[in-house]
Picture 1 (cartoon, rainbow over the protein chains, first blue to last red):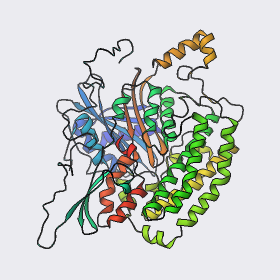
Picture 2 (cartoon, one colour):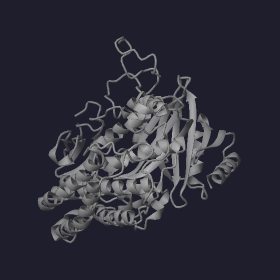
Picture 3 (cartoon, chains in turn green, blue):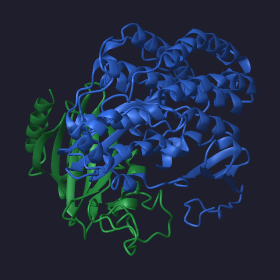
Length: 166
Length: 403
């Protein structure tokens, strides 16, 4: 079922949004699409407005940092409720220029989720109506979920965790 | 008022002057730490701006340092009115990642606990709507049944509020006879209490006048704001994760999905009332069809602590015990998204594993956080006292909102 969906989305996107797809694969029960960051808004708009696919429900939006710490990513989980189709859309971009277009014009629900992603990863969503921190204090000057900020104070030497630490 | 708030006070025009009111952060009627900066035109709310994050505890960052079985106590603290649902949601996410199939008996036992948790969650929400409309009796009367549910949790796992119930792969042990007696006692007597609670409020003229057409939201709006759970169903969309993406053998159970019409406070109240009746019915079905003679755990020795006597006498068990306690379980690389129908909507876990001892990234899709952003829209133009019951009928739980 899901594999067919992936093929269909892949094929439709190839026709309608040119050179957007980086890769398309299945991850467990989810079809996953990776999209070029400059085409992300166009792709999301197409996925939402296409009459057959119609992913009209934004389940989740969140950020991630890649393992090499050089890129940031934004991950969208979309859902078509009547047909019960789900898809995950990912996009990655350079950590030094973390800018992608906002999805608030497509889904108002993206507002706080994008603010949360900005708060924790520092992704700047262009066109967001009110992009400021949401869960952390306004005065904070770091983006705490980036891997460069370890959870515990690194100057402590009484809690050596060389054997089992990450 | 936060100095970065968007609402400002210089709004004097020739005709009228708005006043700014801080509702919260600690206000007895908001049931949690929420701040709303309201721009008021007399009693009418002209504009609202919620400030969230007062009890933010960095769960996602904490999860990146904890082994898989130690993340579960964190999930307790999301929606603490129905923590077993969160616990099992996390267990099922890890089971999906490692490809573990649990016995039917475990599924059914989980369903029983999850539906009890749903009753506890809805019961608090609905009785608190009563309190906020001035009807204290129902709250005091029905609240002892939450206590009975907590006693059932206690006899299963030893804890009451932050349950940390079950294990990855099943339950730690077979439930005792005492537990089953408590569940049966609950099933026998709770419907009577719920009936009386319904009689107090459901057709009560004062309550209906107070809640009908209060804080309504249309289905289109609710969908565009990604509402899920009872709040979306009250607006008339029959989306229930238990039906659409069945987990934990929910496809074996027969139950209705109640929906409302106008998405107002009364509809949200009624949807929760019906769901409580459905939950009782689901628990009855689970007990009736419970497979006998099956183990209460899956065969995943790498994740499930071995019995203590084996640890002392059996080399392999000792190794597994050590690995689990030190958090050295082997997990595959991969990313999974698993969602369950929590007390107030689709609770999702997006887990990215790089094969290490801790998740590379774990994101909680918290339904409260997502639908609470529609609150300013919903309270625009209504009275302050209506905004209070709109909020309590949305069942916004601070722990889940701020994660």
